[in-house]
Length: 266
Image (tube, rainbow, N blue to C red; front, side, top):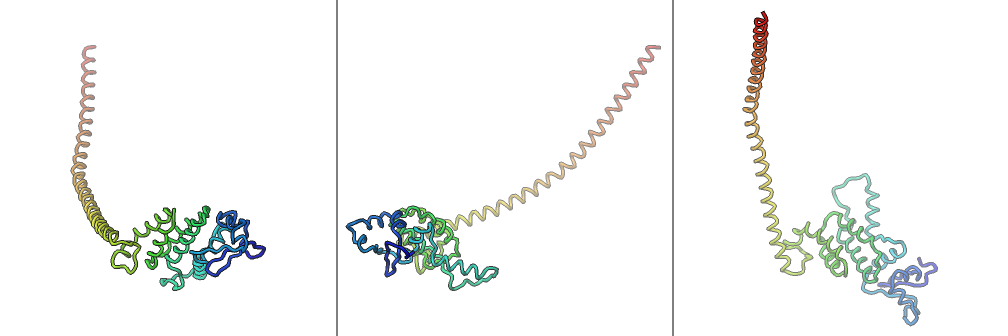
């Protein structure tokens, strides 16, 4: 990217050669700095403070390509390729934990909000994918803190809150680190957890009782069906006999009528 570059971004001792036609058309702050009268217009260097150089690198990559790849994404791809077709029950010690990857994406969200890179929509998919990684509470409290520092990041916070709900036990019982910064929140959540556990037990007991009642009802219906079958058989027999008797009676009556008619003719 350094070839024919006419501008540079500098962060934490790292310089990123860029092209004004690329970065200034997407970031208003860079475009404003290049105007006459600003020191950046003279030096050709825009200094970025308050962010890690890696985060600036991800932003630059996005401005050029429409996407970005963190160092953890690269590591994950390499390990996935090398372990393809193999099964192991022990995680690779070099595999990044969830919070490391999540924090990298949150920092990208923060710099995107700061510099109004509104089209950085790939972040949502990356966060969703990250939250599907194997769970680890380590460092997650830091990720929560960063997420709540980013303005206009309601969707991101909701996703993280959803994960917290699933893993409350890791943060409520004397956890070494907690995303809940006040004692009131912790106490309220503990009470809510107890109530939820009690409700779950009640529902399970009702479910078991319902199954028992269904079995008992099925047995009772089976008992009632057996006498009904016998009664039905008897009724069928009576109908058959009645039908036979009625037909015979009609035949005898017809014969008697014919005989009586013949006598009259004679």
